[in-house]
Image (cartoon, rainbow, N blue to C red; front, side, top):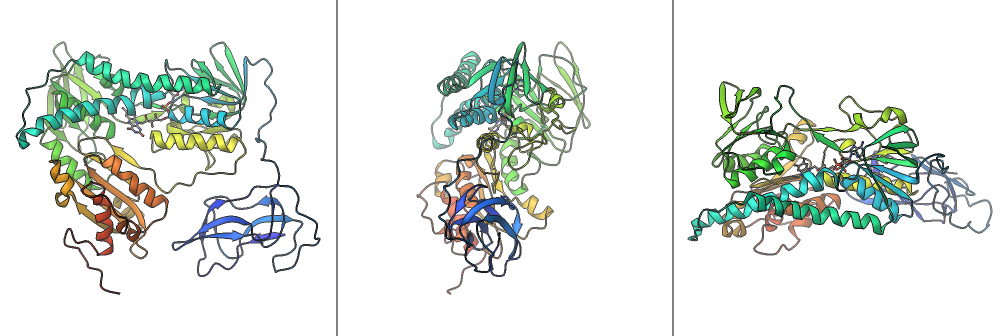
Length: 572
Ligand SMILES: Cc1cc2nc3c(=O)[nH]c(=O)nc-3n(C[C@H](O)[C@H](O)[C@H](O)COP(=O)(O)OP(=O)(O)OC[C@H]3O[C@@H](n4cnc5c(N)ncnc54)[C@H](O)[C@@H]3O)c2cc1C
């Protein structure tokens, strides 16, 4: 018997947001099968009869309407209310599905596992640990000295340790406005580096011990596929039933740059080998600007050159305006719509030509993006497709074109962010273990940990305009926030992007101190399908920066009293 979507009112294209059953399951009448979600509500489709599921024809993300076939039930009759053919008791619920790939051991392999994970960054170690927790045997292959990949070793964590130092220094210097002055700071760069390395060491050391406790075999060295079921790591051959490619990305560069120690990428900049007097940052994206924030606080004169027409290209301009104002007052220069044309290295400095300028710098940070590592792992030997840019694409269950090989994290695609990688890693492990799950997120947050921080999630105005999505903006300027004023940092803005009809929250953008921490509330609101009224009626603690989210929601509802509302909600 085919089970179809029943009458669901006026909706003719509703997404499936959850599939609650698997092939082989036995269900009773009224057992929920799938969850659908319209603009107004989520609804479960119950089973019209008892029986065993032999086929499921929908997946998470598919759109369905009344009459769409959801699944096939064996031992049940037609959906028009007819009884099952027999009154035989329902069969026992099936055991969880076994993994799909062949379980055979690879002969001659030195290490034989159910799951090999190639790359030990946040995506890879999360996938490995989750797979081990699900009872699978796992090898985690990484070429680094320490697990943790880019994020822990030369990315998120060391940059945030240095940004913390920068923040405290800047705040101390600015306390003069409140009548407290300190002497000029003495900077011991070796100790700064030690502090940063200490933070990294604690986290990466923790990973080694977590791997041990879970009996994940860590195989160190550079891995390359030699067949669809083997990876060679030096002389060691790792044989696997399933593989998760989590090889990450590395810094892109510019072809015309000379080889010179004074020209560094983000990894070099994080080493804090001295504090240059004049630093040129090529690229006004997140990574370039975070490092600019660090070196500016440490005392370098910073110049930023960006090819496009704004800092952090692609982000809503009203957020960037606030960042712009602050950094223009601190940095030596910001050149937008400008490309660096040439760099010459001399003993005394680096001569750089950009636009109609030729200037000397002591150091250059190249932060022009990152390139995925898909092209350097021998993917062709396993038959895995790699795009021209080096990405390895995969479907909503993280499966590549080769069914038992998965890809996650930076190598899978944009946005290249650690929290996206970890969620993809968990999901891939769960799919391999036989769980019927798929990628189904409404928003992936992004944060630039600059000063002020810029954070956004879900729909942006730039995207809404490009895709012609109807939207309204409800914003709250931090100049009206008691908390931001009392911190001496009223340079901020919080805004919600809402559906004009339902007032459902579609996106959020925040610029200001700690914007990244604040954003989490908006991410949860979007994920939970909340509308502005839900957030407006949630009591936020006073005085906090979090109130700016509550106030923005009140602005959307026309109930705000802390500023003059654009519109007032009339009595109903
Ligand atoms: C300076 C900087 C700051 C950042 N800050 C943030 C931030 O604040 N928040 C955030 O979300 N993201 C941040 N990122 C991005 C974040 O680091 C990445 O998105 C994240 O590390 C991706 O994780 P991953 O597991 O996909 O890959 P990676 O972390 O790149 O890990 C891949 C691992 O695989 C290894 N590997 C690759 N090929 C092989 C091979 N053939 N054999 C063996 N091992 C191999 C690599 O050596 C590496 O250890 C930052 C990045 C940089 C550079």
